[in-house]
Image 1 (cartoon, helix red, strand yellow):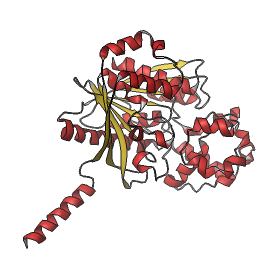
Image 2: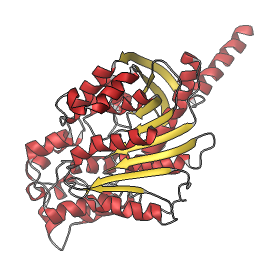
Image 3: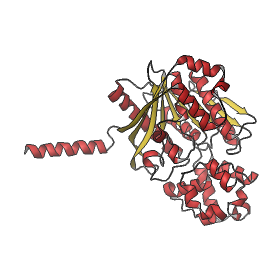
Image 4: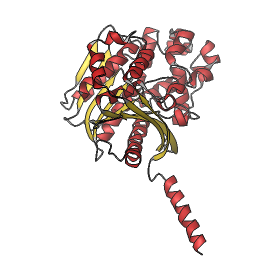
Length: 392
């Protein structure tokens, strides 16, 4: 009888754990990074600054801080875009010593799946931890422990949910393994593919008890992906080869039933599966397959009588917009910085123009840095500098 009761108790415990009572599943790896290692990684990632010395006074000030960052990859319970339970992975980083000044949630920009934070046990976004903050970076669905799933491109609400669940898992990690508390003061940052999800997370946190949202810093985001397609068709160019990945994501998560043969042509159609799987950087793909959309998009894109798949694709992309939803305004206390270059060759600046207009409508102050003469890729480091200035 006792054995039977013990068995029932154990089954109930397993069931409770599996049902999502507690987010944290496991700690995968840990490592500590020096400042030099962090700077070298950023230089390699963006290939813009060639030497640490080029950072001048900024590098010397960071050197004086002398902070080493501890990085931890973990898995945690969350939901995929269809609302099904899954175990995702992510990266948390924090100063090895000292008081935590706050929490920074970074939504990652687009990269090949093998370079997600939990796999490398590093991501350029952990630089925020130099300033004394805990940094949380989800891998997002389709990366890391969920790499067997289709990458969830532009699924902003899901990105926000996955990020929020990582925050809950991080709370458990610090309680169980560090006997410390995750700070409630929270800043959110996202660049490029991470920016729309960061915006969705900000709206979510504005109504979440126990989280004090202090700032939002976003740059070069496709807040309405249909505008990106319109821009590509108007200019004839696209610096990222991203549309195959979008189509595959829409089919997998929204049951869009789009047919590649009515959307693409040539090599891109022939090698669609290989291109769409997220294993390669879309910037590198564009360099190989070309950035002239006339060379790989179906001819019907450039006629008045578009085929059904093109119309369905445009409608699906418009449905992913974070600009057209009725949103409760962000609290006036939340500092907002938006950056975008008018010369962005990937995501048109009109996306940020519309966003800033939406954010300012309820008289919210927004710092809009609409700069000139920078490419999409070059704007990335500037967005992180914007965040650093907000955190100081």
